[in-house]
Amino acid sequence: MSSYRIGGSLADASRAVSLGLVAGVYLVAAASGALTWWLLAPHQEPLTAAFCADLVGTAVVFAGSVLVRNASLYDPYWSVAPPLLIAGWLLTTEPGVAARQWLVLALVVVWAVRLTGNWVVGWAGLRHEDWRYVMMRERTSGRLPWWLVNLTGVQLVPTLVVFAGLLPGWSAISGNRPFGWLDVLAAALTAAAILLESLSDRQLRRFAAEPGNQGRVADRGLWRYVRHPNYLGEIAFWWGLWLFALAAAPSTWWTVIGPLVVLALFVGVSVPMMDRRSLDRRPGYREHMRAVPALLPRLRR
Image 1: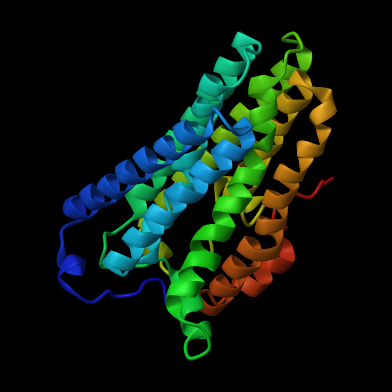
Image 2: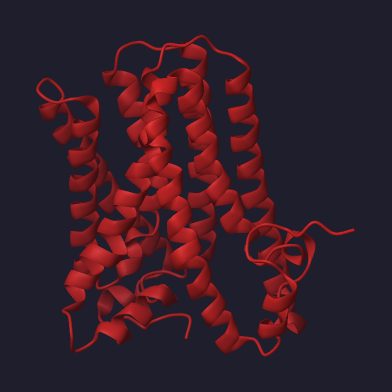
């Protein structure tokens, strides 16, 4: 099962109307978060103000998802929130190294635009809900109210994961060490991660568009070497951000908790969920799992 049919008049809205509604909800969320940040900034540390603003934005998106009865309204939040938070830190923290600050912001914006655009291309509108949420709804039905599962499992947990992942971004923005070779390495890794994600998504979309590939395992291009190259790119992106933090302020090495949390999410949740789904839908996937590693390609002779 890959989608969930939503009942009600909003579900019958066109894709353009659905995207317009999503954009409206996110504008309200951004405005609410910005207002929260502005009110707290004179009294709280930048991290605390940003965290509260992030939670307020999540609450607005959650309310929107309840109104339209579609948890997938949250999906773009993963990529929309980070550039706004980075920009907020640029405006509210002490001046750091301008070259690093603008480079970090630029890379995060490119990553966000690409990832959000990929979601827009693949989203069918309010009549469909992501298969992961369908599975969560079915597994918790009768035990927990869906609104609680939606608030915590679908929305709050990812918000916390992304905020943890952005802790190195705060260090990169506020740190004062001169721009150096570690910044160059960080930029190279982050840019390569964005490129890896982009190529992976493009190759998968092209593979899925061919009629003869329905039900087959994607094993072309990057997908020939690892089962989830797009996940590998996403993980590498957050590690690149952490290298920026080390370059800006080595004492904030503890922000490594960010990429570690992201790594744990993908290794412990996303990869197993996707593998189980593929096992159910693709007859040859079990053999594919034996032959192809999940994230890191094997060194071959």
